[in-house]
Length: 166
Length: 155
Image 1 (tube, helix red, strand yellow):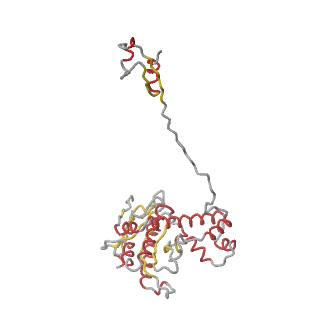
Image 2 (image 1 turned 90 degrees about the horizontal axis):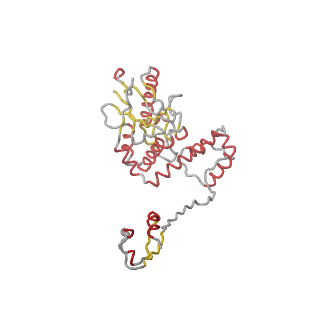
Image 3 (image 1 turned 90 degrees about the vertical axis):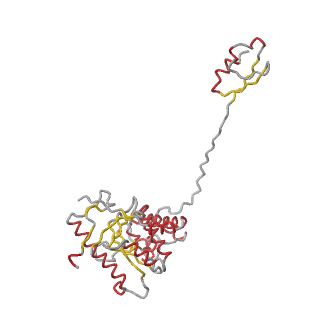
C-alpha cells in the first residue's frame, strides 16, 4: 500500500494549509471519505466542520485551542478537531504548528464508549494517523521532507510506501 | 529535493462550502475569531486556564476549553465578565459619532449682459457667440470660458 499527502485547495489559505491523504488505488482523500460516510446522518455537523476548517485556513490558522490535543502519543501532533460532547462526529488530524493540518478520517463517536480502543472505526483512523505521523517525522529527520520558509507547505517526497511491510 | 506540493481540488468540499449559508459562515468565523481573541488575551496575561477560572470564580476547566473551541455561543454576560478580568474589549458598546461626509456640487455660472448695437453685427468678435436674437442677450457660460466672456462682455 502507498499513500500520499495532497493540499486541499478549497480549504487552504494564507493562515494555514490543509492537507489530506490519498491511499493508492482510491480516488478520494480520507477527508472526503469522512464526508461521504457521514453526509446522510450528520450533514449539519459536516457543514460546521467544513466551514471551521475553511476559517482555519483563511482567517485564524490552526490554533491549538480549536483542537483536542493528545489524541496520539506524546509529541506526534495527533489531535481531533474540537467536538462538543453533544456532537456526534470526530475528525482526526496531524497538526504542525498553526500552519499545517493534515486531515485524516474519523467517524461517529458513540456516547457509551469511554475509551478510543472500544470503537473499531475510530481506533483504525487514529492509529493510521499515528503511523503516518511517525513516517512523516522520519522523512523530516532524513531530510526527505522540509517546510517552506513560511511553514505553510511541505516540500519534498510526500509519498509513503508501506509495501515493504505488507 | 524540490518536489512541489500536489494541489487537490474537491467538488465534495467546495459543494459543502457552498451549501453553508453566508450568515452561518459568518457566525462560525466570528465565533472562531472571538475565541482566538480571548486566547490571545489569556496568553498576554501569562495566565493558564486555572487563573482564568479563579478570576471568574468558576471551577470547571472544560468550560474554558469550550469557550476557546470557536464553537461556543457566548452570552453577553460571559463576554462582559471576560472583558473585565482579561482587560480587553470583546464587545464594542461605544457610540462613536457617525462619520458623515457631505459633498456639495456647485455649478458656477456667470451671467453676462451683452449690450449689442447694430454696429456690432458683422464684427468678428461675435462670430463665435452663436445665436444673437436681439440687442440684449443673457449669455451664460462656465468659468472655463470666462476669458471669452470678458472679451465679449464689453460695454
